[in-house]
Image (cartoon, rainbow, N blue to C red):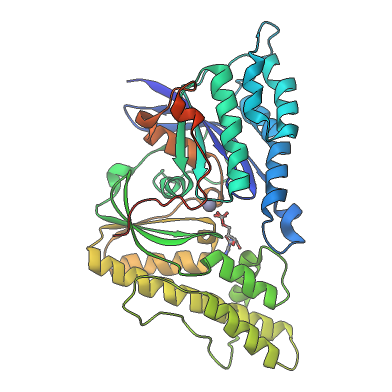
Length: 401
Ligand code: KG4
Ligand code: ZN
């Protein structure tokens, strides 16, 4: 069986990430050779959320250093003086002048790394941000003559839950196995992030149908927006989660419960904008915000969100007789939601797969894995299909179930 090396590139939101993995296509063993994530959180914090044109500029600035760091970590960075570069390739980066300049300086002076595929996120995400990664991947694929695999960001989040647990904190040399064989199908995937809230029905890896999704705000967005109402800085999710934990430990509760939008409805869809509005009105009525009241709100917000997620998942598990639930997305770093989903899986006597918390936020390992799984869809770097690739901000993972 062949060992394949895949370079993953991710720029769909506010993380610039590049990862290089090696997969034994026989055993499914995956080794992370290099993995770099550059977060832009500090740059966006003052805007209270991700600002698309700023994200584009940051990706332009960060992609070359992030690629170099990954190659270096993988021991795949070799200087050369012999590479002659077809300068017409650089026109692929005409819309990213800062990246074009850095690319023309850095890439011709390194030897082509030993890679079999380049995988890149084409959607969903912020289009200005996605374009930077796509054009960068196209230029690298052309210069190194490597096939290009267009990937769906949400499939990447699912795949991070399908790799075996490994000790946290390890970087280079991380070894996993793709444990798809351990999934009992049909499986249901819950994807909760700053931009998405979806329940996906999976018959196998690569076959997805959307069971339910949010009609307005995503779960992470709801955490961030309600946190903002409480005066907490962006991203508010981790802060709400910390305060909610303190409230539970100190037995602090909010006197009047917040709504659980659509919890009793037959619809498998979610809605969170009403919760944000409810928090806004409730906080306005308070005479002042004390540390205890802040904790009480955080706990009630986390409980309301968790109750809705659990109710929708429980119903979907029954409806589709799911054998395993597979969880992904940045919000799954939330300990309370993790624990509650684990309890739900136990009660239903089904399996649950959760990603390592350091793999749950956006990264390029997930895109390299998606590239491996979709390698038969790889495009020749010089083909018309590669030229026609475009950013797809709302790319769905599949049709509605
Ligand atoms: O997947 P992700 O890194 O980026 C997107 O693709 O959106 O998710 C980021 C989201 C943010 O809204 C952040 O507030 C939320 O995940 N988040 C959390 C926690 N950690 C991150 N929400 C609740 N509790 C947490 N511990
Ligand atoms: Zn994401």
